Length: 491
Image (cartoon, rainbow, N blue to C red):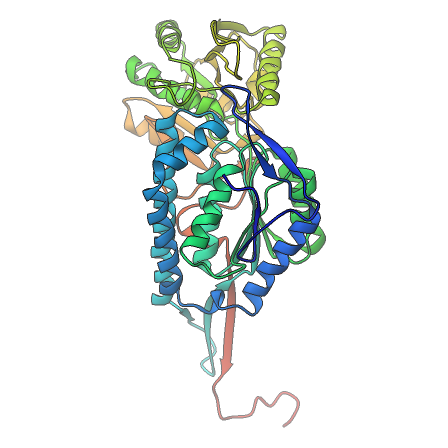
C-alpha cells in the first residue's frame, strides 16, 4: 500500500506531512495510514497537470498512441485483479466476487476508451454544409484541458476508471482525488500508470480529506473541467465553486430510483431483481432501485417471498466465501442508515424485515437487509436516499398511478419496470423521468451505454461515447475561399 501522493510522475510526501487512518469496515481496525494531501499538494498536482497539458506531449499524441497506454493499464489491472479486489474489500467492505467483478469492469473501461481514442484519429474533423458557397467550415474536437475528478467510496477503482479513462483518451490531463474512506486502489492506479510509462503529470493522484483536498481542487483556477460523483449537497458545492471560473462540470449525484412491478410478473424473477437492485454493494449504489412499487393484487405474495429470501442472505466479511452482504463502508454511514430507518419507522413505516445489526456480528459496520412497508408518500425514507441495504415497498392501483408515484421525486437517475407485457414495459419506460431505465431487470451497467440522470441526479453523461465527449471541446473552423473582395467597407 502506497504511503505517498503521486504528483508529476513522482511519489511525494504531503507538504504538511499529514496522514489519516484507513479503516477496514468489517473489523473496524486501522489497516493503513494514507497521505493527507492539502491545498498545497493540490496546487502542485494541478500545476503538474497544467504543464503536461500545455507543454507536454500528451494532448499532441495521436489517439492510437494514447490508446496504447490505456490498453497497457487495462492489462495490468487484469493481471492484478485478485490482489486489487482484495484491497478493495478491506477498504470498502464489499464481497470479494463483487470487487473482482469491479476490477474486470475497470479494465474493460480502459480498453473501451482506448478504442474510442483510436476512432478520434479516424474522424479528425467533420465538414459542415453551409448555405454560403464562398465559405467552407469544419468542426474539430480538442481535449478540454486539465480535469479534476472527485470520486466516491462505493466503487473506488471503477469510478476512477469512468473518469480517468475517457479523460486520457481525449488527451486531457487529470488530478484525481479519491474518497478519504477508500483511497487505496486510486494510489494503485497511479502505480499502474507509472509502470506503463504514462508521461509525467498526465495523471496525478492526491488523497486527503474533502475540505482539505477536494474543495481546493474544485476551486483551483488551473482546472478546466470538474467531474464529480457523490451526494447532491456536495455536488451543489462543487457546482458553485466551478461557477466562479465558469468551469465545465459533469455531476453524477444521488438517486431514489423506482422499480415498478406489475401483477403479471413472475414472482421469483421479480424478487431476484428487487434484491439485486438494492442489496448489491450493500445498497450503496446511486442507482439502487430503493422504491419498489407493486401492483396491489401481487403485493401480498411478493412481499412474503421477498422477506423470506432476504432472510437467507449471508452477511459477513467480504473475504469469507459465500458472503453476499458485507458491512457498510464506515461507522458514520452505518449510524446514518440506522438513524434513517428509525426516523422512517417513527413516521409510520413498518419494518417487515431487518433494520438492525445482525446477531453474532458485534464488530464491523454490518446491517441486516431491511424491508420497509406501509409508509406514506411523504415519509422521509420514501423520499430521501438512504444509501444502504434498505428497500421501501408500496402498492399501486394501475399504470397511471405507478407512473405518478415513480416520477414524484426530486431524483431521476434510474428506474425499472417489470411485466410480461412488452408494450406496457416500453410505454412505462418512456414515461419515466429518469436517465437510465431497465426493463425486467435492475442495475446492469454497460460501458457502451450512457450513464447519468435527470433533475437533482446530475448533469451530463458518463460512459459510452458520451463519456468521451465530457472531455472534448468542439471548435468551429470557417474559411473564406473566394478571390473576390468581401466589399463591406472597402468598395
